[in-house]
Length: 347
Image 1 (cartoon, rainbow, N blue to C red):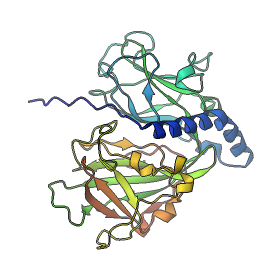
Image 2: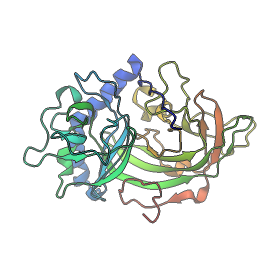
Image 3: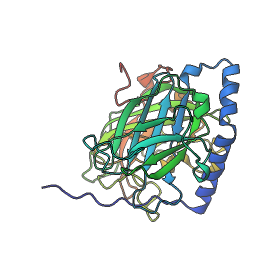
Image 4: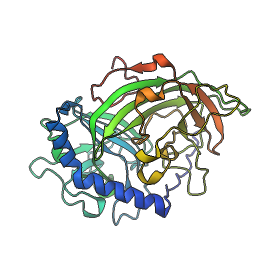
């Protein structure tokens, strides 16, 4: 018997978080292209550049129920676009007919924000990719159009359309300088000390080092592929009344999961974060064993600084349920700029 999926709660932000997000988007849109050019002049490998769209909101004027969340990355080294997106139009399946022009599409528009997205871009050969989903969820890797000018796509807007070709969501497109760098595998999960519940977390979390515009801060992107977590952890967050750690995946200061004095605070540098806000509070996994790419996390730490730390998984109530120690031998130096996959090594 098929079990109906509960309707996803709309992700909400406090006014303070919203203002910081608006400031961050303004900075990315204002000088993203300039940073790309400056990086080129400094000798950074432009083949490692990755563009990101991770701050989705409802398209202006859209009044429907869909609330797209997730992350999309365009990698120059792979000439590919990869995304994990949720709450898309469930009518956009692989077996659905093509439909209206622009239906079920991911489109680049020339404007720098959702409020002034403008027409599709570039005018001569608009960037548009048809997505397919299952029950509204999409996890795909598609080839980028040939001869894409990545510098021209930075500081534009990504627009998502439904099965009728109408825009439903959008996100600014911003620049990761030097793309995805070294990566770190976190696995070997154990029950959190003192947790007596029924959840048994297993699987992998790949931690990818990134550096992004406009100020070159270091941070990480997580490629999460976990089983045994809380099935109540739905895409888009748990609502405004949820615990701040609900469904969280956080890196902590302590070196051992067996520490009787606690694991310390989440690992981040307040001076590297926007508005001195703990960036780990926005990092959540998706239940049901679904693969998930996070937005970049501005920790201010290099990936080497994460070795010898611990990673903790929370349930939907915010309780700590699992812990893993970050082994010294876990760093795999790749620096190819490629978008992370489920099994990055050898892919």
